[in-house]
Length: 354
Image 1 (tube, rainbow, N blue to C red):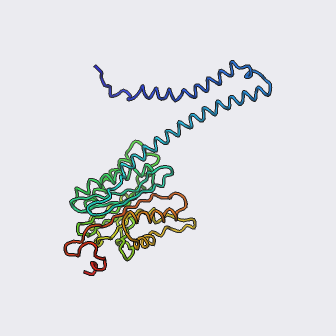
Image 2: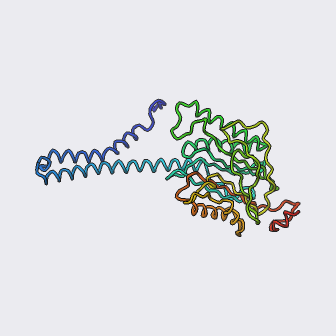
Image 3: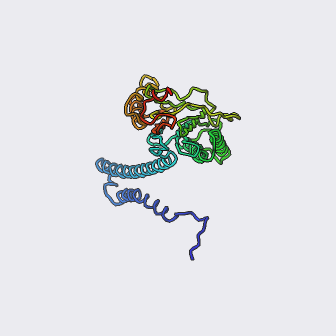
């Protein structure tokens, strides 16, 4: 009978064999050098030509060993990068193309060189309380920001379905952030890529879109999204935001901001501040509002088309890779008008005046 010992290291023999195989090449190169030194007459000849040959042999041996370890390190880096990107894809999974009559498009650009991981987060889901969406921006970027984003996003995915109000969802996110900061403070050691708990925070925007198109929002230090209509682009709201999660406790009352109605054909562009703070060679910020105003006039107007327009303009404007993570979540209302309004296909001017 085979007994399992939980205290024994797992995968011992395979790991040992893997390490043994990794030493085979440098060992072989070392054996070549020793054999040459002991058996080749040139190795003991003091003539200048013999010395040059010996130096070339030893240089070739050293180069072979260095190249072997370099290839091994590159394989390990690529493997770690694939693991990190797989974890990021699970955390920041692509949204479905449609959610309860809303067309959806999203993208995330990481500021981490050579990796697609970062601290921006977004999610959109259909609930019995309406379609709920979140977008957030963790201070910093890299693996430390990913851990914070995972705590907030995991809480939203549960709270969006459990809580009747946006205020209840936000309370759940605040508690999740507090637990994350406590665990980080009282842990055995602080990860090198994590910010000190006293300096860590996340901006969050919560949206709720009801079946009739009514939009409610709670904003914790995040940029307000843009609403695109046939006339142009304008901020969804201009109310003062709440403080970001992690900096200060939220106030006792959390009234949601009423943002009007998202009519059929309207589009919401949710973004992180990395989109507006991208600079060109002259240090000028990216004119996101102007680009969206131009995109609002294009037809057909879909979230995918708006996303392509913004990304093209952003990459043309920026110098090199983004200095900060950039996330865009775009929602387009493809629903029919409510019964009290005219049917789909009626121009906005005909419905807005009713």
